[in-house]
Length: 127
Image 1 (cartoon, rainbow, N blue to C red):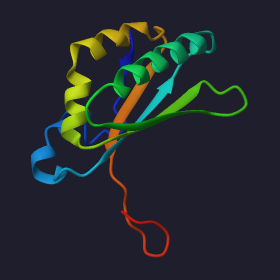
Image 2 (image 1 turned 180 degrees about the vertical axis):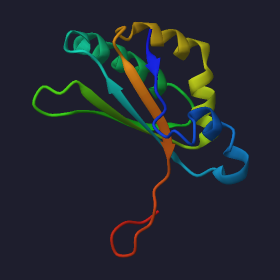
Image 3 (image 1 turned 60 degrees about the vertical axis):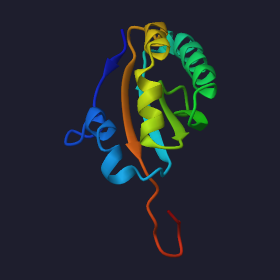
Image 4 (image 1 turned 90 degrees about the horizontal axis):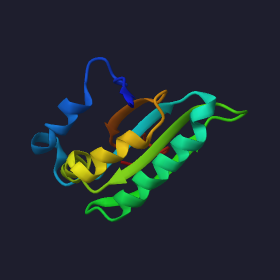
């Protein structure tokens, strides 16, 4: 079974999912999810992640996703998924069909999902 470790010890993902009414305003949100897995679990993780991505592509509010792997044989992966809003992500993450896919991940999987929004930095990046 996949193990969840919060990325931020002060703000849990469940708290982020309850804040859509106060700050969401229909703005897009980025899910960044870090996965750690043992080397023998990498093929299984890749298969499970691809199945999740294919499922989400059919989900309202999904915009895009990309999986990254640490270099030189690292077993750390980072997923970057863009959703139209917190509300869309909340519905997708609570979907029983999606929840059932979590059993496909290798037992050694540790995941740390967290929601983000772009931050503006003058002359560097825009929000």
